[in-house]
Image (cartoon, rainbow, N blue to C red; front, side, top):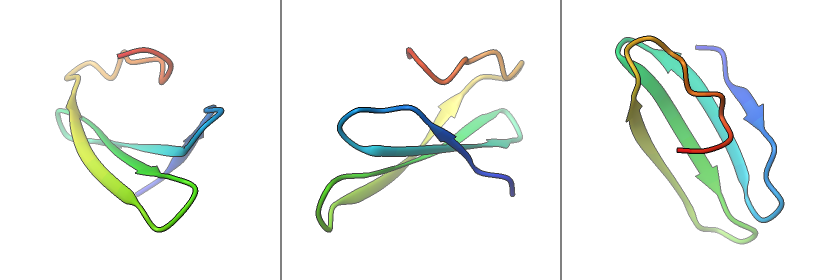
Length: 50
């Protein structure tokens, strides 16, 4: 899986192409982190706005 670092001022954000969309990982300044699936069959999301 290839992770792409996205620009963000407040948190660290990465995304990876997966079948049917993107896997997105977000990490805050401390211990908090989370991941979610963003559906986008054509992989058109530019990584900036949802």
